[in-house]
Image (cartoon, rainbow, N blue to C red; front, side, top):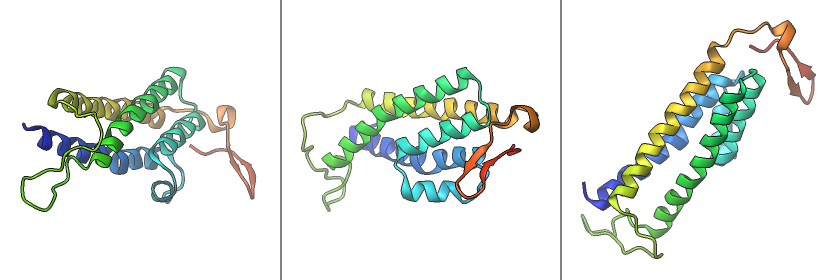
Length: 162
C-alpha cells in the first residue's frame, strides 16, 4: 500500500473512531439517549473520552477499568496529534488532479510503517474501550447499596440509575 493510501486509511479510521466508536461507547454508558449527539457537537475527543471515564465511574467501574480508560485517553492524544498534523499538512488531500498530492507543510513525513502502527493502535483502543464498556454494562449491582447517584442541577442527587 502506498503512503498516501495508508494515510487516507488512517484518517478514515481515526474519524470513525472519533465519531462512531466514541459515540457508541457514550450511548452504552449514558442514561440519556441524547447525550452522544450533544457531546459530539459540543466536546472535543479528549473531553468525550473523559466523559466516558466519568460515566464508567458512575457505574462503579473497577480500578483496572478506569486505568485502562486513562491509557485510552493518553494514547488517543498521541494519535490525535498525528491526525491533526496530517490534516494540517494536507498531505492526504488531492490538489485537484487525480492522484497528485500536495507536499507536506511541516518536517514530519510519516512512513508507511508508522501509519500502519497508528491504525493498529486505533484498533487496540477500540478493543480496550469495548472491554471497559462491556464490564460496566454487565456489572450487576444493587442500586440501593452502592449506587453513587448522579448529580442533577435541578433535582440534586438522583440514585438508582443502573
